[in-house]
Image 1 (cartoon, rainbow, N blue to C red):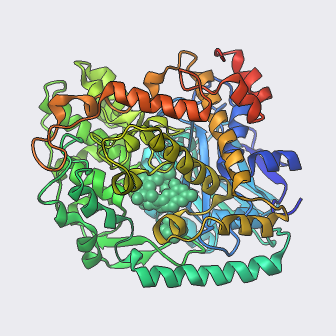
Image 2 (image 1 turned 90 degrees about the horizontal axis):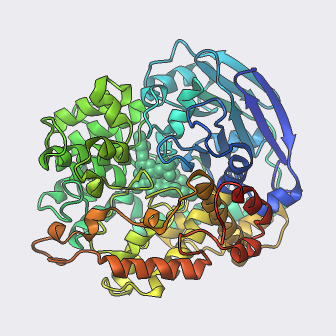
Length: 612
Ligand code: PTT
Ligand code: SF4
């Protein structure tokens, strides 16, 4: 077997033991890596009903056959576990040197099980595995933790770590890496915290196995250069992801005031142009020539890295239009290691609930100083309110009652990304059917939808496009493990990826082979969902109810008077199910499961939920 190391490192924190396990070629071809490995491992090893914060939950860090090798944007890793936010499979993808270092250490994945008896740093160097005390840094934020680890192990190691959010089991705590990156929105950082695992440090010294290293080298280095050239030519990284903010405002797709409004006259104050003017430094993941991380000075004078999602949800959605204040909120999320997106939605929901009389309190939209205090309380589970905020908007809505669930901006418990879909049916569907809850990672159909079809359409072409994008974004990039930005932002050809994959593995795959693996992974995550929620229904694939509410329609602008229509959305959802081969509840049928080669997994699911 080429391209894979063929080994997984299994570590048990309770017994302080570890084992190197090999996997078969069949496993490698069926699941490839990253999200594929993680979904399969968690399906087989974490039974339904497992407490996400208990020692039986497992944290998986998984890489793919091109992760870490010099080719465009391969410095990424998938972190996954049963999510404490959504109650089923959850994952995220973050830039980190772990991608290269873990593979150099001889592993394609790491499984962490059990619970340590005290704060721990897991140190991995090739065959050596150590469980080191982390008392010195427990209670500290991610920046201080990073400094400590850098100081101790040198800047070249791969690191994943958590802040106070993860330690205190905030349900949307993320995992952070040294490159100023964060991942695992559905609480992967809290799973680390529940295991008293403060950080994972990885160092590898061996070459990453490749079938054809010469071709890979020529191809990879040449293409890295070319991607960098295209980025310069197009100027994409001048504003990076934040270029989209002004557009969202123009097309009435920006989240403003807990998604009540879709545009704001002051949005220009926090857009990509302003961000670039305020830039003090640029950061990127390893193996990247289009570095997209833009940092600014925040209100307190600290360096804070901002992307579109962060500005959209901590800025516009809270009606905070001072960039340095948005930078401060973003800095706190990074320091505490909590997801900026869920944090933004949680605070906007709280302000909205107070406004509508469902909750008590004096927090108001636009109040940046109060928002800072609330983020700190949420990260530390400080008092009753801190506890409530740390549990995410769905649990808050259930506690508030009074119909507030309608405007808790989440699907399956995961808060929505910064696209206001009150009249964007295809993107609303993309949130509804995303594998792990309302993430934009899998199907970002909004630009296609607004530029190439009619906005009003609920036709099968939109369901088809969502599936295409899921195969590419939620599938291929998540299991070969590479950043999708060269493709989506610079138009770097998708055909390049099978080339890298084949040079690494010696196989002869095309894109169709990739889509088959992608569909299998989607099918498996659905089975995982069914096992955890045997009463799964199509209602679970609906976006927030407020997007269907005529009382929430814009009063002026391009979509004045318009909202999503429930019966039409249901039709669009049915197109999606029909094209995927799913039943009326959104669960793959037996015939589909057989086509995907998931017979054994289906048999395991049937003990818990019905298949049709
Ligand atoms: C991702 C989600 C995103 S997606 C953003 S901004 W984006 C937020 N970033 C956060 C942050 O920062 N700090 C923090 N405390 N919380 C944060 N939460 C949010 O997390 C990310 C880039 C971006 S920037 C995007 S779109 C692309 N995402 C990719 C992906 O998902 N897969 C892939 N193969 N390639 C991708 N390339 C791009 O990577 P989650 P990152 Mg993160 C600081 O992981 O859980 O999926 O949430 O990954 O390394 O920070 O890079 O406008
Ligand atoms: Fe990382 Fe951005 Fe480069 Fe992607 S484009 S690898 S997210 S720096």
